[in-house]
Image (cartoon, rainbow, N blue to C red; front, side, top):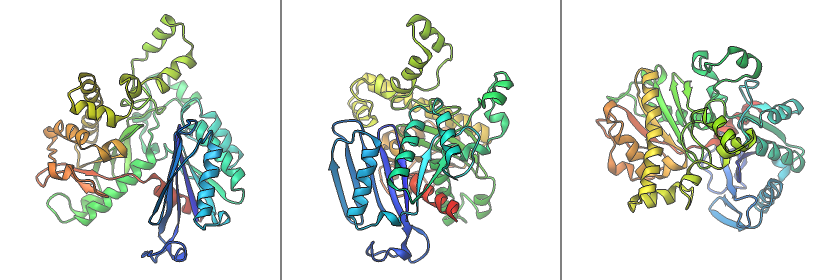
Length: 417
């Protein structure tokens, strides 16, 4: 049995997996008799550190919410494990716990069993991903205490982007800083980009032989742009299964406007603010990571759902923010289409693009020059995985919900084997 922990700045997503052959006594009506991984249980603790924090969990056909004051990550993890036990699962049956860690420099390019060296590396990378790495490490150390018999395994979010060529990841600053400090572009949300890309390939193989794509094209020379747009956001250009470029570069701060993070800004703004506002480097970093983005542009709420509702009601500030938001996505899709020398498919994922037909429509309308056409009826649907492009669209557009936890669990099995 395998537990996946995906910790965020104020949340912990978790999923419990095993192969269904072993689960007949636990999960009723399980049709999968193979050794494939089957999700047993899932849930999320949200608003850690807040008075109104809660745990949502799902087990079989049961769904429940526990409202409590989860004051730190250890308390949240203890509640998750207690919930697993209540469902009749023994904690000793959990062989391994997999952790998503955001930044690891260039030191690891695949999943690793966590030891003292790995823990040291995560600590050293905290300044590059201050919102994420510190939390990731806290959850790792808590799980080591709470599940001492289970192997603790980690993979870094930049792994999928390690296939970038040097000309696409080096900055135009003195090369010695790359050699000394590994200052370069890394690319993020790799687990999500890889998962939805693989799902796209599966779907295209099912439709091979159509006028759009042949089986040979699916296996070779496929040019795809994957868009992961949620609280955090990034875009990847992928050719032949390898990342050519990713819009998040050395840290998760860059690219599109996010919930509390700024997009990429003129670097001269940083010393300007430090001088005019008498700020330290740490204070400016805090502003860019935690006091920017949608939350501070839209003072009423940083939630894209609220901004979208206001946009529909013709609120001028909301309209301006939506335009900024969409413009950034369009900019990178255009640029990456040129970088790939054409485009076969676009994949939209993460909660904003999975749930907002408005944002999807605004993006696709601006891509008609490369032959993107969407079916408005399909765009209004909400399925497990679905194509929203019309039959005569030259570029296929798919909405594929990401499942980082499943990707993580599959990686974990490889490491254990």
